[in-house]
Image 1 (cartoon, rainbow, N blue to C red):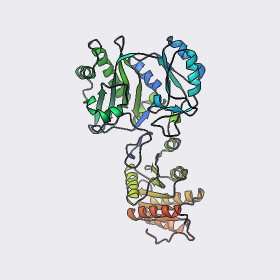
Image 2 (tube, helix red, strand yellow):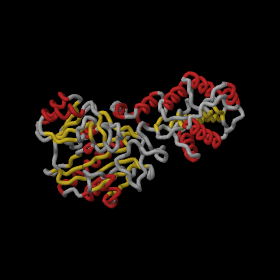
Image 3 (spheres, helix red, strand yellow):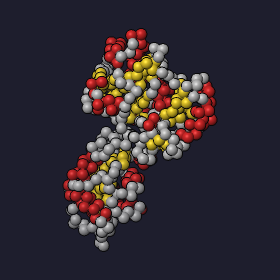
Image 4 (cartoon, rainbow, N blue to C red):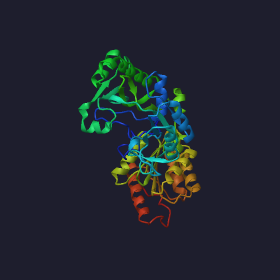
Length: 447
């Protein structure tokens, strides 16, 4: 089974706008997006672990802790940052009216005051949607002044099937805006994963960015260390914005955003323990706990499919027939009755869903076993909306008979096009208020 990452939108981007966008999207780079995101303070801890210079700081989970952290920094010029997994925090607003998820503070008292207004409240940014994201902690660090600010990211590029370093002299800015308005200001350096980032490569990037001569070697070393984190921690994204040259000519990472490959979880136990599920869609978290790959979309036809490729084809054919898929849901090879029930509960929790399209290839599991689970689930959940089932593979004839003999309002249709047409048709019928029909589906009804 192809595994979708918890925040991944790579496979479904053709069908719906992503909920979370990567920080930079360039025409020349096809990015890997199966990634676990971690909070900034966790990224800062990793940077320190690898000997990369960053402003002094620590996380606080309560206002009292925020005051203590601010005192420990020993500097009256600090920044407090709401820890939510979304871009645009500085321009965001909290549900209590506080403007800005990143604020300059000048005392431990201010740290406590702003922490009280941030922790436990939802921050709305350009990436979160109207509901925003819950802030459970704040990161407080000393404020450093930069002579120059640069952008640098190490990414996994599917197009070249290897790492790339994306850099720009225009750091500290909205890098997506830079990519759109001034693409020549962004440089892409492709890395041979068997060679890595050599001194010459790193030095060349540092020079082109515009570091002063006395900072070139320190910048080279920082770039190589960032790549080392990327490689050793199975990262998909190491983004530093800004990477700065300070007023006293030090190279420093001022802000960090890291993502890690979900498929490396088995060997990156510590990193994946840092996962914050409060920052993720609750339904997607629930699905992952049951071994389901689920992404909620904006349509009204629920999809239950085994296999990512078949799921994509199913959503595609629904759209081609004038419908809109309500979700991506891949139950994988284990389309057991329990998995089917959990999948149906996820699908029907969306009040917009007016029909469910089940498209299963019975290879690992038999179609008749799937039919039994499908019928039992429809009865247990007392489903009132139409179900269109296309079951192909082992014992498909038995499955077809089981469904038709069940007396349930389930349409068993062999042909994919006919099944998709029926799903769209019945969805419209439900929205018109003409469902349910007086009698159960005709067992000879093929769409």
